[in-house]
Image (cartoon, rainbow, N blue to C red; front, side, top):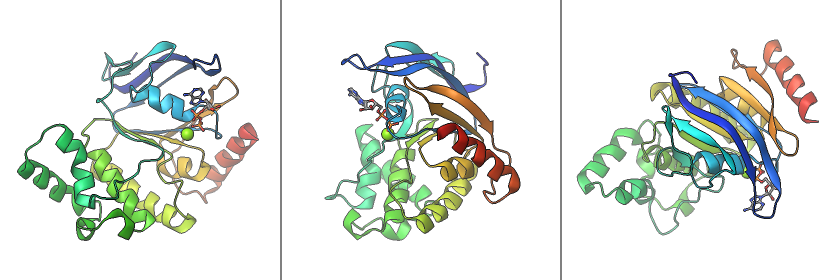
Length: 243
Ligand SMILES: Nc1ncnc2c1ncn2[C@@H]1O[C@H](COP(=O)(O)OP(=O)(O)O)[C@@H](O)[C@H]1O
Ligand SMILES: [Mg+2]
């Protein structure tokens, strides 16, 4: 294990109580500042792995290290956005974003300072007093992402973050998210079934496949232009593996 790993997943195996064997010996690492994507088809075990890394599920065996400390089965360390991260309808954007800070019993003024410090960057300053029903899909996502960021973990864990959006909005969000990631120097683990999303957002892609699931291949992405020949070639290889 290298000392500079933000996250290190060591030999994770998981069987649900019904005896179904879902994850088979998953190991990988993420370095500080990197964005890594776990890409795999629906039903393969991505959300199960997400819940294990977030500490919500204790794996049958294996360990989760964050900054070289064993956090297996412990919540509250990473900032995470679940697959269906719904905004509370009776709270404004501001009140939704403040939730993780309220849970930590932060003072009202500190909460306000923190939210206002980032609301421009997340392009939601004009949305803070609106209720979720008045927001577009992309606006809701930006509010959800700031709420996640307010959990203040040093790793952002995102499960299918942009899947619910239409094609054009999704691609606008990718561009915006890449900018935010470098400005805030985020370290991210993204979980998705969307190949383009993985190619555009990540430094590295791990392909999760087979039943029980394991990492069958790893790709380093140096060029983020999905229309470049280099990336099209990687896309072909990924499609070949997942077909
Ligand atoms: N709590 C659970 N108990 C038993 N099986 C589960 C549970 N949660 C998920 N599964 C099963 O585990 C498999 C992987 O699910 P999931 O991790 O949600 O996959 P993905 O996120 O890749 O679509 C699926 O077959 C699903 O039905
Ligand atoms: Mg899932």
